Image 1 (spheres, one colour):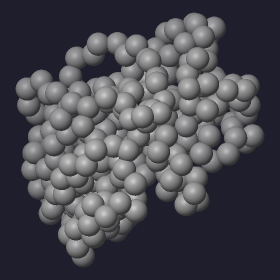
Image 2: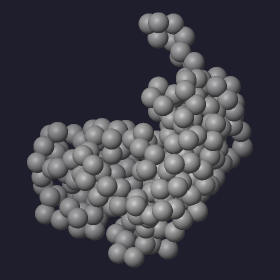
Image 3: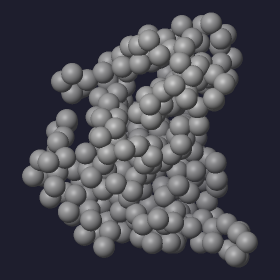
Length: 262
């Protein structure tokens, strides 16, 4: 159930067939003993070695690990942007949201949000009509015609997330979406995201460098090793939402995740 005071978002996502790499049809996300390497100027880079992860339908799984451990590569595999060298990836259709919002600077906030609908063949006027009601629900009323440079960092991220939701995919792969925000804006936007996902559940794999963020938002936290990345620990959160970062239970779980990282 949505948290008290949660933002209510109603988006009609089309039914889509699961995308499978190396296995039968999936529900949610399943990564089994995956290895992946690529060529660089310095030679072969072994990004992942035996990485495994599960995310049940509508579950939020946060992934933390040291820089360069292959977290972003993991999301690319989940979205089908890369294929594993070994192992198996099964996932419902997924959409990737990178760290930077990547809003089109020449398009309004409304047109940026509605872009996935236009790409899928919807007329521009209909796409705008579909996206416009959600702006008020996300605290963006009155900014539909604003250009990206006229929006704050948190507002830009909300527009980017709305664009991600309107892509209509059951799996969201979020790559450190709040890393560029200041501490106060990041905390506010984390709360907004938790409310949005409570009212519009999706399967989420959230990569973050912020362990506290992982515990506040995730149902489980998967800890990765240094490169080549693999799963070395899992912390089950098991706390009701909304969660306060100062709650004693949240603090204890954050310490457990930090110990696993160390």
